[in-house]
Image 1 (tube, rainbow, N blue to C red):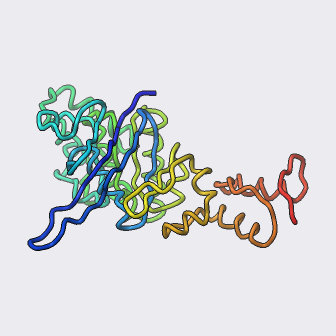
Image 2 (image 1 turned 90 degrees about the vertical axis):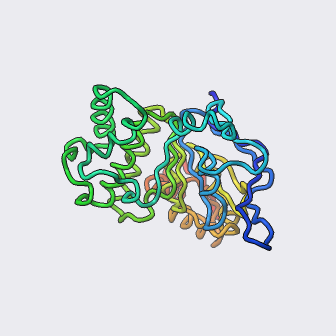
Image 3 (image 1 turned 45 degrees about the horizontal axis):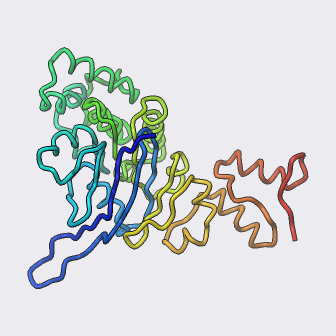
Length: 290
């Protein structure tokens, strides 16, 4: 599979105030993300995950090293517009990305600024709204929608730009459980059905379980990298980074602390229940007790 994003020996420091040393965030970070993958990036506040995300579409530029996006160098000023067409960003607060009083006009805003012909804009708007399940709201006022609906509109606005990659920085942070589910279902469809490279920045463990790959950041470095089952089975490592694990893994881990030997890869409720059924003696059980 081809590479979507390549981070090579990335160094970055936020500009210092007068008389103060630069605050280094990264000093030699390396990372590769494949095209068409769904990657979740986890980390507590200050771990560097949002700073990294902003390098993916050249909102921030390296102090040293490089970031390549589909073969484009983010430090090349001549490529900045193409990079931002290629990588769309969705942030925490959807209200900050709303620019019009009607949903379909809001979705059309970015393609219009990119010089897309009117007939194609109409098609892009309709396609984007259908992709996020919001087509029936196309003539509604955005400010009257729920939080989850607003965030889906924000995602549709990015989709209308036809990006090859979408980076979502804590997109569910301000949403209730129903809103989070709506947005996560939309994100997963983008990755599974539309072939878009999706990078989800989050601190919610359960959100990360839906990704193909989970990257854990701590102290501005990559602490763990693998499938959700591989990463979340490392309970002590996650705790060392100030993070938890899904409740299902926490249950299985607690049982192991009590003397049982259960595999920790049952992330969903169904998988966890099957692990427990296996332990209780159903055929195929592979857990033991000392």
